Structure formats: C-alpha cells, structure tokens
Image: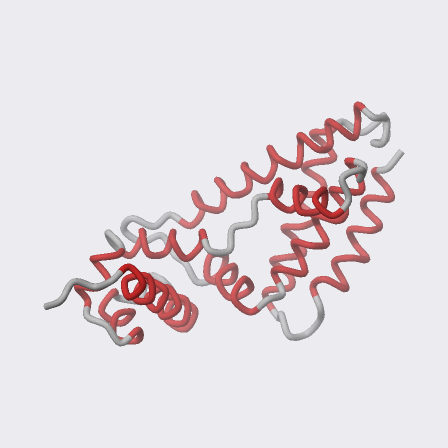
Amino acid sequence: MARKTKAEAAATREALLNAAEEVFFDKGVARTSLEQVARHAGVTRGAVYWHFKNKGDLFMALVEQVRMPFQSLVDEVKNVDPDVSPMDSLHRACLAGMQRLERPHYRQILSILLHRCEFFSDINPLEMQREINEECYAEMLVVFEMASQQHQLREEIAPETATRLLQATLGGLFHDWLRAPESYSLSERGADIIDALILLLRR
C-alpha cells in the first residue's frame, strides 16, 4: 500500500477528530468505542491507532482544539490596543472568550468535557478540568496583580480574591448556559454580568 502523504495523514487525523466530537457528544465518551469513531470517520480502526495511542489520547487532542489559555485572550486584546489597562484587558478578554464559546465547535467540545465524559480507563475528566482551571487562575491572577499595583483594583480586595470571584462567575455562566445553550446568548447575558462584576472590582 502506498505511503500516505502528509496532507492525507493530516486529513485523516482531522476526520477522526471531527468524528470523535460527534460520537462523543451523541453517546458519551465512555460508551464510545474507537471502532465507532473509525466507522463514523470512514476509516479503519488501524488508522485511529496510527494517529492516537488510545481513546484518552484522542479525547485530549479534541479538548486541545478548543483550549483558550486566558493569557492568549489577553494578548489578543493587547494586539488590538497595546495601551489597554489591566482591568480593561481582563474585561475584554472575558467577553472575547464567551463569544468564542458560542461557536458550535467550541460549545460542543466543552459540553462533552463537562457533561458527557465519565471516569473511564485513561480518562479523568475532573483532573483535566482541574488543570485547565489552575492554568486559568494563574494567568488571571497575574493580570489582577498588575491591576492592583496600578491602583485599578479596589484596595480592600486582594488579587487572589478577585481572581477566584471572576473564575467562579465564568464557571457558573458556562455551566448554566450549557444546560440550554439555545435558550439565550452567552455573550449577551454574560456581558451584563461581567460588566457588573468588573465595575464592582474596579477602584
């Protein structure tokens, strides 16, 4: 059999990730087999193992497609406005993140991670969520510390407290919205809440 080109291999990998997203969302991760993913993608099971070690590796690759490190959102804001203040960069980064999560691809994978993924073999969804939350906390904290140093954060509120408050607010918004994502706009309702929170935190 002729060796696949890099382009063909990349296309197969993309097809497997797309298939995994659809089948995981429909059946749940634990109840999905790699055979089902391969069949849905129109490839052999061997093709799955060529690209991914196991189901956990496939699931991690899927989640990595939509990970949004908070620092990357802040950097995007700064690329548009290099002189943006720390508090405003936090504000705008949150709004940008919510707008991105409304895209079907992001929304569906987040829903799989939060609601359709159980402990199974080499998959620990709570550990994955913990790692993402800790990364987000650390990156938010850096910006809140800058805001505090520049006297933009209310002096009676510690940067650590402000970070936990913002993170809990965002987490609550995401979980609530994913229960019925078609019932309202995350970015519109979330904007009102984040606007109010930043106003309360701002000095």
